[in-house]
Length: 194
Image 1 (spheres, one colour):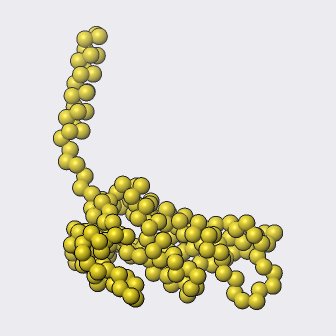
Image 2: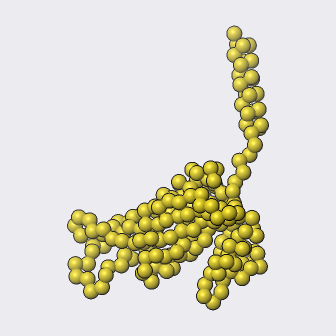
């Protein structure tokens, strides 16, 4: 009886090893992340364009679903002049990521930053984003999702406002990171279906 159990254990280990080693490794796709577009109309949030892309990059890096193209030093790596006096040159950036072998590019938009007044005058900052992933080979849209993040503020809403209330940048960053994490989870789940 013991010999039969031992034989089954050896056989099970053999099949397990054969199954693990006979599988082809999953090919990770190469993804580049383009700086986000700020559609809020609030000039104080312009700094979030590149920061949002960095947050998305770091989130996807932690999830290990893609090979990622380095964003910040892409011009140095490829020799392309991707930054001009006017900012990022979109065409040069796309050429550079294609030359580095990217399969896809992720475009993001910060759609809205808003506030919600809670009980006792507390304020919650909300950020809505939109993410699109496009296949570089043919322009096919393979993923599109909206996400929302929020952050409860530690201050009360001003009772008398001289100008429209703009949530503080630090609170917007926290809410933005939460929205990016939400969408990042969904991207990682679908990564091998692209």
